[in-house]
Amino acid sequence: MKGKLVIILVISLISACFIGCVEQKTQETPKTEVKEKTLKIGTTMTIKTDNIFSDYYFSILAKDLTHRGLIAMDSNGGFIPDLAYKWETKDGKTWTFYLVKNATWHDGKPVTAEDIKFTIEYLTEKVPIYKRHWSMIEKVSCPDEHTVVIELEEPTATLLVDLLVMRTLPKHIWEKVEDPLKYDGDDKNIGCGQFMFERFDPAAGTIVYRANPDYFGKKANLDKIVVKIYKNTDTMVMALRKGEVDTIYFYARGLDFIYVPQLLQEGNIKFIFAPNLGVGCVLWFNNHVYPYNITEFRHAIGYAINYEKIVEMITAGYGKVPNAGFVPEGWKYFKETKKMEYDQSKAGEILDGLKFIDVDGDGIRETPDGKDLEIEIIVRSDIAQNLRLAELIKGDLENVGLKVKLKPVDLNTFRAIVREKSHEVLISRTTAWGMMMWGGYGSGYIDARNIGWANVTDPEFYKIVDKLLISTDENEVKKFAYKIQDYYAEKLPVIPLYWDVHIQPYNEKIQGFVFNPIYGILNDESLHNVKIAS
Image (cartoon, rainbow, N blue to C red):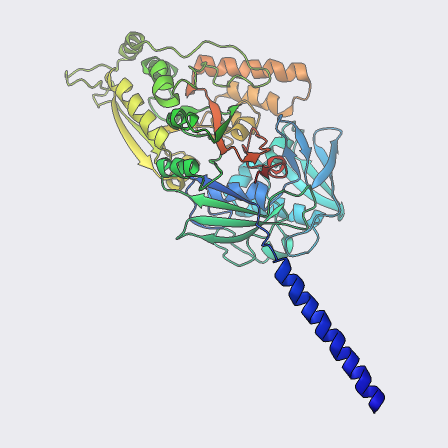
């Protein structure tokens, strides 16, 4: 008994000493809180829900934050591995992709070939836009859990471009969902990207992403990304100046040019000036609607527009007058076609020749059947720059006797209109990816068989596009790239309004941004290089 008391006493003394030592040490060296490395991004993209299928801009954020595809594109515009570490095709019709073996979903389950197969089949069936993007895919199979074989209806040289839009889905979640546009389960944003979706607060206008510790690729130097949504650019730019956000982001657009001079005066703001492989803004005709189906009428509109004034007023000198060939400089096999020309006298002569004449003297031209020649132009209300541009174009067209009605619409309405092709004329940009898709060189926007905002069904145009879709020989690609630019310049199915550059401002404490031609600074390569200086 006495021995036991000694042991208990010794243990008590040791415990007391240990506790006392710990308490003393704690007092001497107080524990410092580790500060999270958080990148704060401001945006004016309108985001209303956290469903990647029903909210366009939320889906854009998901593409390189929470979700991954088979392949990706690097800052030089080349294809690089993503979930597929290599791929091959012998005939352009059957493509084989070999998947990395260490990718997992955010819930810990492995990413397999079945997930890829399911994603392609599910999105093609359930989400309308993918029916056009992947219309050439005939069959997807999985020889094993890390190999995917995609068979096409016919050889296609541009499959990799079309696969860039893939947001791979976990089959074990989505196979139970009948309508992806309405699904609101807590697991709807589980992906396999380097960031995990944490929360969306519509009232506060914030979206929070947390770094994924189990990401299969190179991990980011960040712990968290916070996206702050602003109602207008003025407020967002002020937040950047005050350091409340580190940078800004708007998919396929840089900062509105009018804000650049004031930010250039800020000592703590730096800029990336990057070539825009999209077209800054375009006047889109529905080539199936009278009188926009008349080539001469489209040329008359082309002559009526003051491009130099647009460059001065809208791009603050950072843009330039475009060529009639539509495709901007910087593209491989760019061809120097004639520049768009402002000549209202010539516009008037063409309109007179088409018998569009102001018969009653009210200043508005009439069609041959006596109706006022009125043009309705749809313009997106979420982009203030486009609204200003629309007013300039309205003034130019009214100067040659055309009645113009501007119809501002929100993004969802705009997308419904272009999907149904119920418009006469639109004002909107193109994205770099949009210029790459289908046969490339903007063909997907023009071709009625694809997105087809211009709704062109001309057999001559189809022949050019069909050659671009299948050509792998560089001489052939060059030949038909030149042909399509000549077609644009001659037929003028759409009017490019200006070419420009992307202007990306950011706080000087942020280092390592890598600009991507499709996703700007919000891309995988950029995010794992970003560092926040203390």
